[in-house]
Length: 229
Image (cartoon, rainbow, N blue to C red):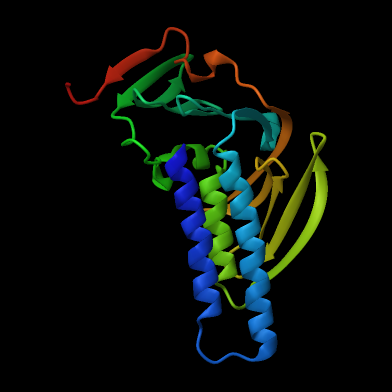
């Protein structure tokens, strides 16, 4: 969704501004700050570009469970599916679904305003179930880049046949490693999020999306809380 690009780009810009306008610094400190800003900006830019693509990505979670991120354009739609839940964002509604005792219940709320992006808090449930979304990763990278004691290292790998750049962060608030593919999809994440250990890895990437990805689960109960038009 277009506004998501703005959100992620502004995060990266704010990191650069904070790191380069910090008062008195030694030359080494300045060099380290610029390097961190470049790393964060590159990762955020990749995630940013991916928001304008149509793709679906499957992930392997800890314990053998799976999750999926799918998005399409014209109209802009996105769907995040994890064990026991699903979040879809379309021009018609923002829909949260939870499955209990084999039956899904979905709550429809008003969609984001035109050219607006769902807030990071919208992904709270997905995060608790092990699916770390790109906005969450950008937030963690931002916090790490602003931590003067954090140690940040870069490496490269291949995930599901796709090249990815990885950033490994060692900091007192919690270590983590995040990888982003050349296409801009989140490739993998390992670390603690809100005190819980999270692990996910890309298992399949496709430049297409099945149209049913944005449908409600079969036989789901529906609660419509959208304002009357």
